[in-house]
Structures are given as C-alpha cells and as structure tokens.
Length: 224
Image (cartoon, rainbow, N blue to C red; front, side, top):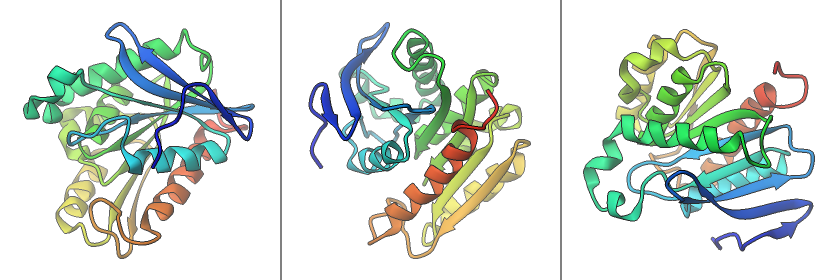
C-alpha cells in the first residue's frame, strides 16, 4: 500500500505529513471535508504509521467522513528496543501527547476516538481512562486490552473489542478484559480471521464494525 503523499487532495480529503510535538513524532493527519470526529491510531508490536492494515482501516474511516491521525508512537532509537513495544505507560503517554497536539491543530474541537491494535489497544484504553472527558470511543483490533490492567475500570468511553475467530488465546484475554470494563462495551469476533486479519474480507469486516462504532459515538448527533 502506498504511503500518503504530502498534502494530497483526493475526493475532498486532504492528508498532511505532520510532526506530533513535543518529540516530533512523524504522522499522517487526514481530514475529510466536514469531518465530525477524528480517530487516533495506536499501533503495537513494532509497527508504525506505515502499517498497511492500519492505513487500510484509516481509509475506510475517511470514506465515512471521519478524520484520522496515524503517527509513530516511538522514536527510531526507542523502536530498536523491543521492550518498548510492551511499555504500556510509555505508549499511553505518547497518545496523550498526540491528544494535546490535536487541540492546537486543524482537528481541534473534533470529537476524538482511539483505535488500538495489539499492545496499542492497551495504551489506548489507558489514555482513554486518563482523558475520560475527551475520548469519546475506543476500538481495539486484535488487541491486548488486558495489558491496560487497573485502568480498565476507569474507562468511560464506549469500547468495542474486535478479535479474529481463530485467535483463541486473544479471545480469552479480551473476554477477561471485557468483564473489567464498566462502560458501554461489546466484543465482536470476526469468523475465519486469525490475529492479523489477513484472510480475505476479514479486515473489511473490521472496517465495517469500527466505522459503525465511531460514527455512532463521534458523528453528528453524538454527545459533545
């Protein structure tokens, strides 16, 4: 999948190459015309803003009129240390920095949702717990929400957990995390999907589920 070019307009959607301050973390901010909300992505397991899966999901959300922010949670030298992939407090802090950066960006005043994959899902839930008045919805794809630990009980944002039907161990971990959440919540299992949703049509199923969730809680008519 091609990396979005700098400031390219496609079908009334503008993608900017940006740097999330204060660390200058590189990212892509995509703003559909008249977007009603923005989804910030939190990748995991050594991935980056260039993740083909997250880019594909982001494009689906853009088509539904939602803005997206994909950015690198780790600096290059940090990404070289595998331990940082599982450093949930560090990843959550980077998400919080992105939320602060958004307040001064072209996406300011938009309703905010978080989309997390793998360990990024735990970071998204920790950030959502810390910013309960700001984060309006959370979606996890093949995530490890269990790693959010004690933060789960403090999450107020409606949370959707999506897991592949063949991802048995992650299903069990998501079921345990679901029981700890006290917000509006749902677990969706995509039949025939493994952990990375590489099977035909399974990632599109994720897009459909995530889009419906975010449009419901971030779109027109949602509480602000």
